[in-house]
Length: 428
Image (cartoon, rainbow, N blue to C red):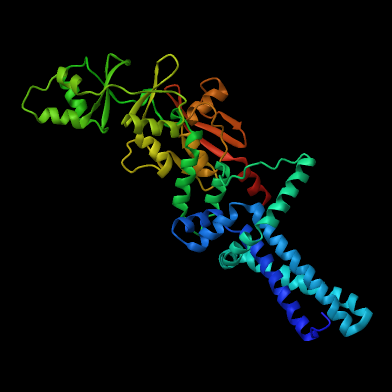
């Protein structure tokens, strides 16, 4: 070193600081990359992404490589700084060189490169992989030795080293990703994706058409009455039964009935029954995500929901499940939530007794209980354990409920006031 000029040593020192900054930026850039975007770019054929993906398959080796390079460079820089300091300032140069080098390394080899790499990981990681790949091959023996020693030491302290690292995300993590993707995904698409994730939390009981609303034709009625019901039915499929819905014998597609009507051969009850499909039964409590797959697998579009005793509870169609994802169809014959609720200027909401509790919670961000009955009428009857009179008021969770109309042993309309709204208006 005595034959090397001070100027040359300073130039080498600057190069060492730059190389140290390169290793620091590479480490941060590699570790802060979006793994899913990286995988996407790799599948599209991006060569840089493929190089980085190969490096990240063994993160332990990558970290060891970066740390080895960074520490070797920093130690060499420290030695050169000491020599330069002693040449320029004598014995005091050691302290001066230590202070100056510490500041320079922190600023130019740590803070600046790592900050830039954290903000722009792809700009740093992709180019740096060109050098890291061959370096990994060259220094593989030393990297392997250090990794082996570190694993032995961790085992001595009872730390498991064979724990697999998975890039898979949980459903709650995926939900967070969707919620944080507003700049990339429209609000409507976000709602659809979140609804898909919620399908397993919702069962067929929550969306089925209840038994008392199922449209069917009693095959024992006179023939003129049956024809009239067929021609005036708003539904595409109708349940055929004898005397009672419990004695259901088939599911008739109206399109098939119309085809029979237009044929020259005789159209009678016998031909109508032959045209009906076998009823597809669904156990109550089946999650929607499972039922959607079963509909597809069995090539069915409608099913009858039955309880553990085989009694009919309701009817579910593929369209009902799809509405849970994309929202109500305009062709639906059932009343929409907008038709069943009327927000008032004082913060209260007039609600029909047939309104679905889950849909109300989603629309108004409420927390009405969803365990149990699915409608407002059913929920209130369960709470009161009696059929109330109009004018009855009660509190459920943080909501005041006033029953406005009761007919035919059913609650027809209520007024709901969230207590949070009441408190906030009082405070103001």
